[in-house]
Amino acid sequence: MGCQLSRDVSALPQNEWTTTNQARVSIHDPSVTSIKDDQGNEIFYLFGSHIAQAKTEDFLAWEVPFVNEYENMDDNLLFGKTKENLAETFKWAGYDDADSAGGFNIWAPDVIWNDSYEWSDGSKGAYMLYYSASSTWRRSAIGFAVAKTIEGPYTYDSTIVYSGFTEKDSTDGSERNTNYGNTNLKRLIDDKSINGFSEKWVIEDGLTYNTDYAPNAIDPALFYDEDGRLWMTYGSWSGGIYILELDPKNGQPIYPGEDGLTSDGRTIDRYFGTKLSGGYHQSGEGAYIVYDEDTDYYYLFVTYGGLSAKGGYNMRLFRSESPEGPYLDAKGNSPIIEKGEQNIKYGIKLMGNYQFAHQRTGFRAAGHNSVIIDENGDWYLVFHTRFNNGSEVHEVRVHSMYMNEDGWPVPAPFEYRDNEEIAENMKDSQIAGRYEIINHGTDNGKTMIKSQVIELLENGEIKGDLSGKWSHSKGAITLTIGENIFKGTLLEQQIDATGERTSLTFSTIGNNNESIWGNKQD
Image 1: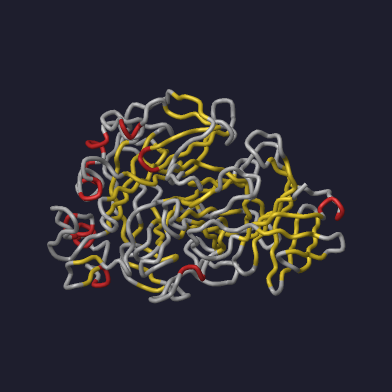
Image 2: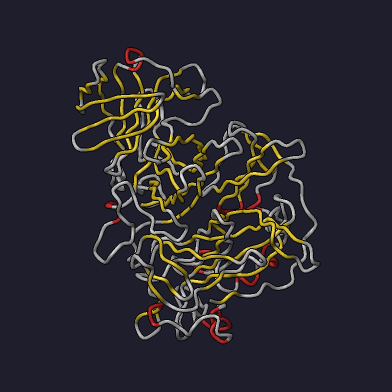
């Protein structure tokens, strides 16, 4: 196993953001993390693509930096003099080249606190910001930068994973030479951290990167496992999602060094790490893993489909007893894609394109989420969504999640509000009635899902567009529809932005990987 050594890094003078208040924020690929302020309050920070940031105390009101940071690259809040600070990454991708011609492509960052990071002055502890920079759909790189406060600016440390390289001199949409000698691979091979150049990484006599096998190096996301080990997931489409363990002292990958297979037959690549999902250019990106002490599971979220409003973007869920997998869905299937397979067969689909009857605008392409479990043990699903209004405008939404009886976190049907509560003490007669339901299905659908209507009868029967049985206990609800069993939570929720309408709702996950939401029609 090999580990790249960190260079000497000194912290830049630290910032305190000047912010303006907003009711909504537009952050693509939002990653959430939290800190405690001087009064002991938990403050949540969002970081997203194109150097977007925001913070909040309650997920209801947001503070946003006063200046649009993507238009301020010469003195950026996060990266200072961005072109200079991230110059090593930009030699490969992300600045004034191919798809980033005339500007920058800095995407999908994730920030984590690391007690063990060692600065060049001997001090310890850093916020580590991992980011991706990209010039084509395959030539990308993941780097990281560090700061002593979460608001930065962040000092560049290293570029740690490259993609889109070739064995020989070649190009892919610009004059950049994609020879692997222009990445960190040559040094890693020379110092024997990695056992040579793999023939699996390239095709066509070494002139083209093999995207059926190897990942696109974007969308890094970090987490600690139950033993305190630090991990990074990453990848988008191409060869799938991979995971690497990191050395907490310097934030560098512990590259496997040798190729191999996991006990369940998944790829271990000498450079890219262990494969978790995907392959053969099936959609899948924005991977995010969170560990829950109560269930002792690691939960993997991956987004399928295309990110545009009509691209079919949707979030999928898997879980594992180990950080390195295997991750399985509700049907017990692994999301490793073989040639010719379709990814729609794998993963609990949490949310598709939907609109309840009372909503003026529907929601499309919800995805690239992060998840946080707060200091009280409450779960929040944070994602960006587009809308059914003919535009590509996107905004952040936050939904609570609740653990069902089978150990799956189910997202509430409506966005989080502070008057939301589990309906623990209701009688059959209070729950019974007509419900508009959304069955999110399992496809990567690009059209709006049509809602249906069912009636929950007091005698435990379900009639209407679906038929079956239902039962409840202390806020948990179970729907049995044919051979499929859906388990979830009954909630009393605010169902509009004004706070004037509340309703009894339910959210369930089925053993067939489908999610069904319900909204009572009073």
